[in-house]
Image 1 (cartoon, rainbow, N blue to C red):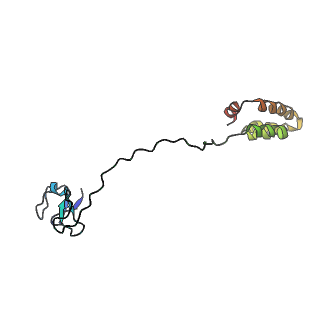
Image 2: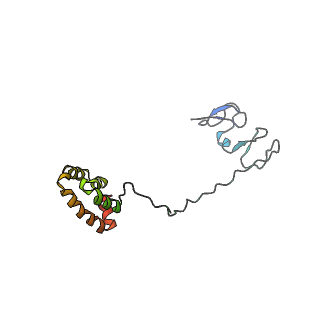
Length: 148
């Protein structure tokens, strides 16, 4: 429930009432009345000028529906987070494979710790040389599927 002004007498009335309690103007008529911006007299919303002072009434522009924006292709590829480079993994395996650094890079922390624990035996060095060859000959999509 809202309080509105009667366009005839400016008396405050409920929007639920059937007519103004002060002047008797029906509320159904109020929906079609507007106030003149110059003299504040109530006039029909269809008027092109005020009947009291002659002030021209600007009609609101007709509503134009704005078409939705057309979908466009994003020229910038969306980079997924945490993408690993096959070349970097192979280089780390070749240079620091005995310490398991490439395993940490590939988010295989358990294996990285295992390589560190056994680095004194040189077994991780031998295994990492095989891993370098495997990484270099692995397809890019397979690498991304396994490590990204």
